Image (cartoon, rainbow, N blue to C red; front, top):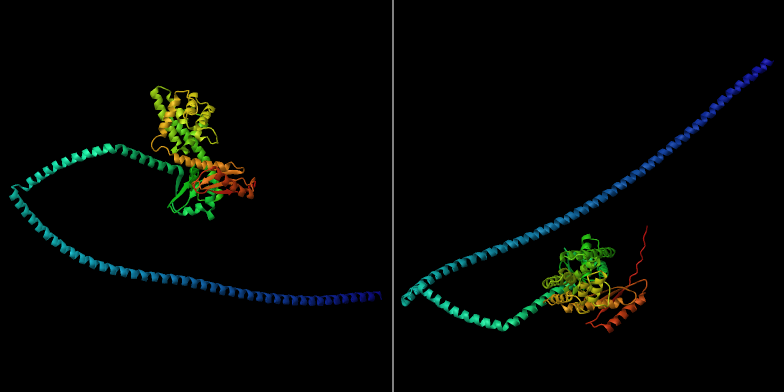
Length: 523
């Protein structure tokens, strides 16, 4: 019994295992079929999506190809139209040239015909003239033969007698003419000499006037004028404000005129323009930078001129400040006469006179070169230039004889040295040469300086420039201390003071400029 129960249990277990295996296999197959179906559906969906995407890409590519075709077609048609237009224009030009050429050929033919007619007429006239000349020669020979028979003289003998008679008559008339000319020359010699001197003075004075008032800046072409003027005149206004001169840009070909009574300002403006044109960068900020550098270069040039002058004159041991002031004489004029040339001339004359009198030539030359040093002192002073020059010479340890000669050359002080009258005489000689000086020019420049100094006497005025021959006064004020309302009142006050204290022709325009600038540096 137990064995049968065990067998039954084992059999039931085997059956159960077989049923489980069959059931698991069924379930696995059913699950596999379901997954296979899902995979198949997913693959079909992917294929459908791929076909749709491919169709869309195909449509896009077709559209792009059509657009590109249309664009290329339009470009080709446009290019073809342009070329067709050019060909038509060239054809018209060729036709016009052909017509002109035909007209020219026809005109040349007419001219050739006319020339041929003229040639024939000239040939006939030449033949006629030749015949008439031969007839005239024959007639002349016959007349000469008849005259020889009548006078019993040959033609050569008659010619000699006639020449002798003419010589005698010419000698008589020449002597009479020379005598009368000499008498007239004696009567008019003084008058003619004065006339010649006056004409020479006038010519020399005109040259000095041009030198002292105007500088000409030459340019390669007139296109540069537009760059110098700038947009709405900004560049030229900045240049005039920085240099204090008037820039005249007119119809004069390849030239710009720089007008101003101060030669240093004109030279700074000329050199600054030269550098700006060479650089090509012309704008207000660049203009201010270049003008500042040029002003420094001019200061260096002044020192160089002073050093070169003292070396040429053989003068040694001068103080550097005196050397610098000698260089400034190059840009200063006195009554239209260049101050440096005047001082060099006085120095040479003094050395010659001192040598003739047995005095110290080196001291005489030194005093002659420095006698007008007070005229170039950069600061304003109420002292006469002779006294100011003497004080400067004393300050820089010059010889007492030199100091006395400088101070006494206009009788400002008593002469205590033998050099003093020599300096005075030589100064008068140099200044009295015909054409050396022009008092009108000096008074005109002094009026411009007085005009600027009058405006500078007001509070808040930084710079002042007299331009347009003194007809306009430009005043640059301090923007931090002067308001816009005060600027308007300032122009009125300056005009009233000028009306009360100065004499001038016409009218003077006062322009007050207030400019506010804020500058910061990023470091």
